[in-house]
Image 1 (cartoon, rainbow, N blue to C red):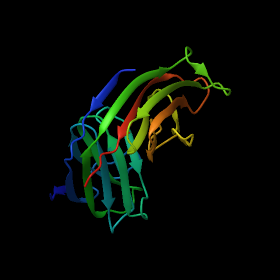
Image 2 (cartoon, rainbow, N blue to C red; image 1 turned 180 degrees about the vertical axis):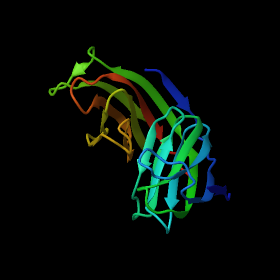
Image 3 (cartoon, helix red, strand yellow; image 1 turned 90 degrees about the horizontal axis):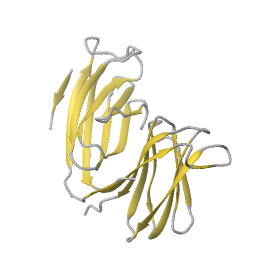
Image 4 (tube, rainbow, N blue to C red; image 1 turned 90 degrees about the vertical axis):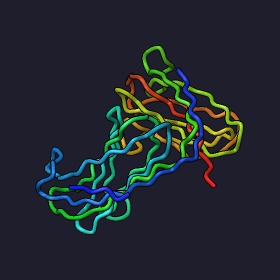
Length: 230
């Protein structure tokens, strides 16, 4: 039960619009259940452009669990963010359309009231590069295929690098203009790897690869310039 209170490259612009919505609800035995019997309420929100979205669920009655699903079906989940009764998902929503949130419980035991906050931040500039890992690529020492991308940052802002993999468990390696290296496997989903926010002016190197040897499939590499909000 719920209630409302308040590579191909694509370049998307920066817009300083923000929106915050709060829902209140109650999980009970009459609500639909996930595969393990855990009850949930479904909420939705719309995304236009590319922006950071924070979804936060709190309850004094039960151990919370969040599922956030993109229009294409990619899920990001969180159980304990700040104790057992707070769950939070932060992501860069680069897919326009209707996003789905399941406000749920960690186990089938316990029910009661909760609050759900959805905060849509300022729109960001995003470049999306599409690629594919396969047998035509360079092969690492342990047998993983990898692609290397170069990206020039003209200003010393904040940047986020995301890898969305389709059909394989992706692994992202980012090297800054000064030689500092970051690595990431999963960022809330086996389909998503994320590094950032990081800073630096000059040429960046981004290596797209897989966790295991011989994995192949398509991917999207997202280069996100974090908007500066006064």
